[in-house]
Image (cartoon, rainbow, N blue to C red):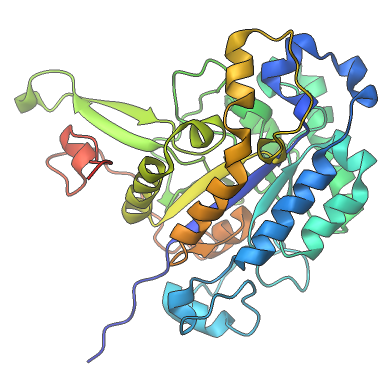
Length: 374
């Protein structure tokens, strides 16, 4: 008897839609009051990414469609359900009416959407999810309660007016999340948040408590209608005391994209991604349109550290992204909204995270990092 094929692994490719002059690294040298006088380059860069994703035909892995790479899953819904398991009770109202499959998620700034609404509509029309990245890229955990809720609600309404569909997801600029911000995101009507980055050595990244919440793949259920979808990092567990006492300390290597993707050799980066996919069945990646734009204006007065983080390897990023996508053609590229709908909407695979009680089949859970150079 033939065994059922393993479900395809999912890659959540996300884009934080912001322009070169809106990034936190350059904020000390570019004030908000000067934004309207700056050259807008995001439209061209977003088009470049959309064209790249169309060329790469993101969607179902080639192995699941008889060797054909397919950017749309129209007509394959039944086969997909056979592969991934039934999900008879999807989360109602997440995806726009008539949209069966979305390939990537674009977390979009309201400031840009207000000036370039046609780009927002084009993102949706070309098969991607539009989600919210706030209005003007302010650190959410530094806002007053009133300003935070105005930011969350106002930018959500703006994007919904442009797209004519519900905006389900939010990502805080610079992953500036905490429990207060998370509560406000939920109360402002979002269905999921994707603001948690577990890399602890970046002081801008916020912290929330996820331990003990039901987990499906890489999504955490925080209540019946709200989920957290962290970006993916490479976990390392090492024992900090006597091995017999099993005292383990967690640490996460930054593996989710952004500058870490630009700075790291691609061969090493791909090994880490494959490890995460094999462990959890999904991987969440993020990038920015300005990262494929080496011709953007240079802020020469910026100090060395911010300049290094912002400008290094911009000329390599587009080809590097293309090669990474090609390397994972056996995976399915899917939006955050659709991933949650499929994995969590039915309650499939929902389980409490168990404490580590002994040796694991994953090397890093035995105190050893995965071998990324083999």
